[in-house]
Image (tube, rainbow, N blue to C red; front, side, top):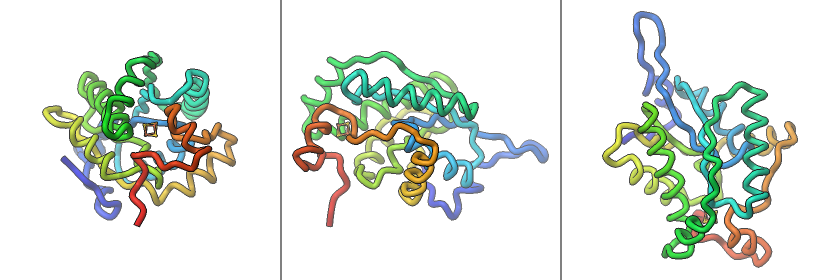
Length: 208
Ligand code: SF4
């Protein structure tokens, strides 16, 4: 279990064989390209990772919106030669059941996405996993950390809890500059409704 602050993160995961730095394999769960462009420089600045992106977001409704975000991510990764693994299955019914049956749908949503990421990381020999969701000032980081810690339990890959929120403004600037598709709601069909009704999602960070 590791939590890194930026100050000591640089050497926290560095391994050497002779003078060669060995990069640790990190699986980065990605919600969308605009968040990725903010998280990647931050990860590269602060660690030595061999990064693969992982798209698993059945919570993005409807199907067309899901593909829009995925297509944009594919194009961005392909242009920049970034490794991307995308789970293109779209278990909508299962996802709706998960969200609607939960006391807190966002907690269940984070849990499902990070559980699948941890599973993939474990099956494919990754040392770490984390998520671009940690860049959003709108998401509840306590719930995100809880989901990551639950997903890492009993597994070799460790969840890296890194607060990327300092890079949020930069992610907006870069994604506008690159003309990346920017979504106007969190993902599920409830959040699409809630933006019009000005209702906060249950996974939104607490306001004090
Ligand atoms: S509001 Fe966002 S985090 Fe919450 S359930 Fe919907 S898609 Fe998931």
